[in-house]
Length: 231
Ligand code: SF4
Ligand code: SF4
Ligand code: FES
Image: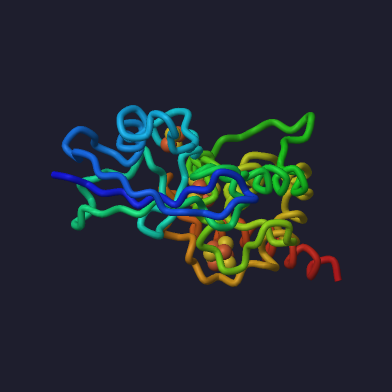
């Protein structure tokens, strides 16, 4: 079956975007990532589509892009899922475009740094149930793309820091997790509108609602209780 791709391209951040349409034999590739490789090797060898990938196994998050308007991983999106044989590809919109389908997701890592999301020197990690789920986060940015409250450079850092802070807070003893709880409160809890747009979008299958419930209980409600107890 022939599959036609409409790909939103841009030579650089300063230049105007345009749509390039390419038709390939869909029977020769299973995923959008494989289709992009085929297009670049055979159809556009002189002017290949720029896109990011590393693992091609849903492990690095680099290939996140808009596929028919939904943020997804190209390596985890099968052509067989689409009823129509026309697929639109575009870069994520919340991040600056570098070229074609490549965006600069530096803000995710800047926010993690600002959150102080690292283990303190003497903290011993105690891996527990919720950590396994949180540790699956790829930092792909799909949850940020659909979040109505996240914008790059804002004080609310979105669900990509939720997984990291949930993991650290769950793994470390109370004396170390206090700092993480404070940052979580300021940069996640206060800004999150609880719309749960992020809940079903995660390609790693992270249940963001479950992480929020756990983190809110630990970082917000228990902290409030401790304060109350002291009064
Ligand atoms: S929580 Fe899911 S969607 Fe958000 S950055 Fe992590 S892996 Fe991506
Ligand atoms: S619940 Fe809504 S506001 Fe909160 S992180 Fe998810 S999408 Fe964003
Ligand atoms: S290339 Fe690593 S997740 Fe797709």
